[in-house]
Length: 620
Image 1 (cartoon, helix red, strand yellow):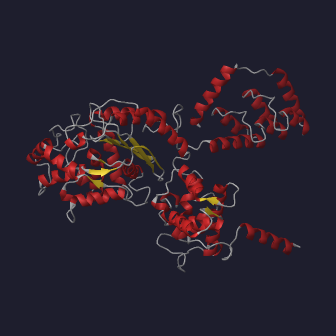
Image 2 (tube, one colour):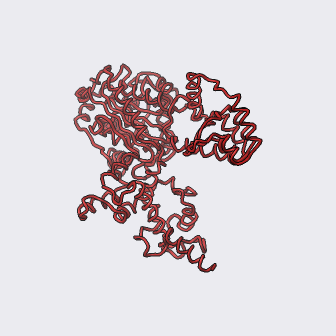
């Protein structure tokens, strides 16, 4: 009998957890999957991936860096901790099945456009280089299949197997901004508000910039997980101008180190106009308000300097659009008398390293200012800074962590010309503006943004861009000094919404079920709604009454003043549950409470209390 039961159980487990080599289409080895660009680095060190116990215990110790699952000596663990290719295949296949059923919503086949629509809702784009294998497989399926662009489970598995880690994280809303659609809807409203502004003038001191269209207005963002959103004129190339300075400064630090670079460049903002001729007390040029090149030619002798910087910028942009405007370059050279004057002043004060050609340095500076990006590629560059120097859409480490930290620090104090102090006070984020109307904005560890609107205010910053940044921070708690726990009036897009609320219901009812009065006190102190209902419309008082927990019932009715007349889906109030399970003390207590209970708040007071509780949720 026991053998029969054991055999039946084994067969059931085999159906639920297929392990045999022929049970599923074979997927790639786990080490290849985890080393794929589609797997963000920070996911590799988690104890449990996708909520599947044993992923780390079965794979991470066995396949360390540089080891292959096929290497006999690659697994230092023994016995059950060693997973063969078939078990890996089974695990990955189950992930693919779960993903298929999540998107299919009960259908046997998924239209490809439904998958791509659901993908875009998470913030990922079909052009994401991490999804190159997946999308190329789907295009091939469309060409070769007669199903008319429909994917069954097996075809879906073949398409997503190489990107299953990234896709599962996306559809489980485990990116830095879980509800990306809601977040971008707020961004779009702020964009439309700023679009109505008409102030500012296009920069005229550089002839080529004077030709810019004042009606251009675009905003692109890219999160550290590679979620993308663009609105407005985001595909039109424009010159980086001064926005290139923090980028080339970061390249300098990564290449030569902080100590060497700061022998020639200071750290303090001057407080003067950006093109003022002045030095600090140490004879260094002020950092934040100058027009001097950030990457002089002496840094990069092996190849042409501009090409070296362009290669770095291309990596920061995830190989997206990087161009060059020769017309702007020539215009800068012909009208750059002030810059030549600054160059000769620096040369006279011996601010250049020995052997550096001042004219070559200025030429490089003009070239770098003429580098073109779009809002979309610029947002990826900003996101690389937000992500500690790692490009979020390629996973390539471009800049050192020290370089990024130093760059963001200087952007915070010096990035917005004479408006830097005001911007740091009101917005509180690292940013850099340019006379082309661009603003490169970084929300550290969250996202990067690029705004473009050529009309400038009197301080040389984009009029619409400044307004957009201010409204963004007034709505979301992105300011560096916003308190993430007690900032009740701002939204935090990094927090999960509905799932958090669902967890609070579970925690509340479980505390009532187990008689944990201490937990209930904590919940009440944190302004939790003690009358929350589950899917059966049962409250904590229902559960406590049914279990006969007299202390819990006392706390709920005496301290929390909960409503004793709430009915569950079967029409029972808490007293009915106490009677049904013969908890006489609870019955007497609830009868007395029902006789004396009267709602103490008017509707207006109740609404005000509900709003107060909603605001206080952020404190928990």
